[in-house]
Image 1 (cartoon, rainbow, N blue to C red):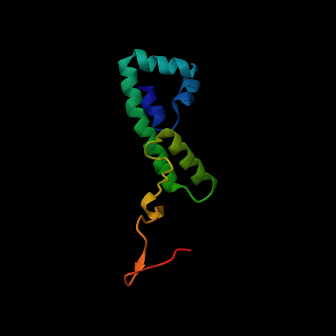
Image 2: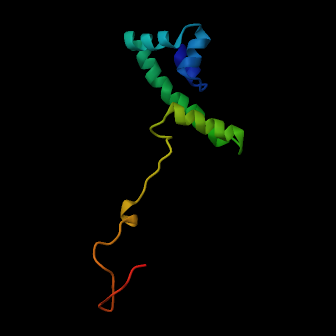
Image 3: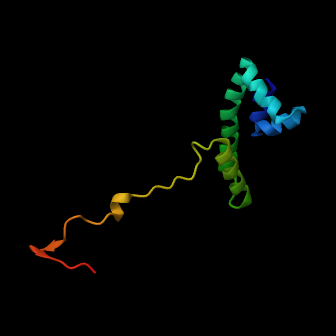
Length: 108
């Protein structure tokens, strides 16, 4: 199917819609209404991510790398999101006063 072939090139569903001369809404309607088309899109999405990951691995530093990372974050946000975690325990104050050799210490 054409969708499989074009996503092997890394293009989005919006670009695919432009390639075949229909709106993006039409493509999404086809996904809802035609199970074969929906299956093809489901196969094509991971193929697109594979294409983009290989492109990133071949990329040199600079704009090409940034563009590939940007594309991957949009193509597969679950796997390519920026993860920020905070270890809250590290920042909690102790509940008991600190002691040194059995004597309380003063906190500044």
